[in-house]
Length: 412
Image 1 (cartoon, helix red, strand yellow):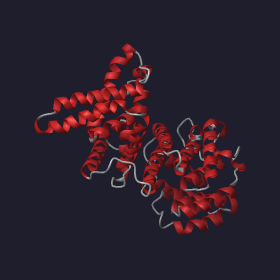
Image 2 (cartoon, rainbow, N blue to C red):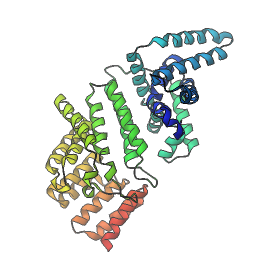
Image 3 (cartoon, rainbow, N blue to C red):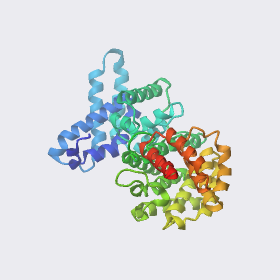
Image 4 (cartoon, helix red, strand yellow):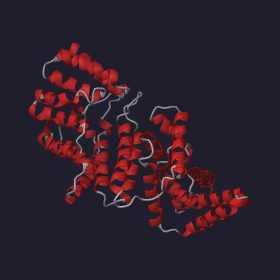
């Protein structure tokens, strides 16, 4: 599916957009993720053979799902022997009956698969890998490359996650109303982590991994279409859009990091910003602010400013105060301190950071932010040391070089 020549026949985009939908339908009937994936992959192999010759079908997604079902039926018939025949026959009947499914049933299958991939019983890194594999249609090699681990390691991680779902009998269902808020948090956290890794890669020589940013936004859109009344789903999508709108200005031609105040704002994407603002306004009208909605509101204020100097920092501090009430984490407090520095000065911000130094001792951004504040306060020697610590803890090449440049500018 990675052959560029196939893009002309609509196979590659259909694969990306419809893979998760097809797998979710087949998984419900087959009860086996590997079997479901095999059937869907076989359907795309058939598409790669036929579409260039016969043309793209009127409904590519339906064609893929129908072909995958038929491939699954063929394989089940070949495999059915002895005592397993009755069980296989029951699945065959379900597969055949599934031909007449309504779109709403397929939508429910996708939602079930999202919650299965992000089940709390799975390790966080497994949730991310499985979501990208089954819902995003990324290959194991692509996921391994994005997270800078060997492909066999990622393949093993995905295989273990599937085995955990099977062995622990993790239910393939949408959580009940009472369980939904807690389970939804896990789903949103996975999508946010995927985007964050794309926007600021935690390791390696690339600052931005565009494919992960795009995939996180696409999956957030899918989730919004499935859960349109969940405010935090809207908030997450708004947050990702408002941050991603600045992607083109985030690095220079050499790949070097450009911090927000120094970015060329003419490169920001106005259409993406407008969409993000619309979602934020929708959230505000509902009157039930949550962490992702408040973070989106903060990014909306940043995107409103035509220049860095025009940023409404008092409003941002107020929004961070609200965010701290619903998500009292050290990271939120650290980000609030950055805003406090713009309103009350570096010394006030340094005082706000002081209680965070122990819990965030191994977090490079704590040291990088503190170094910048120390430099602004005229404490250059301390700032130099803090930049050095930050650089030593940072695994991403672009951000580490940025910290080293800031440090070296102090000695110059």
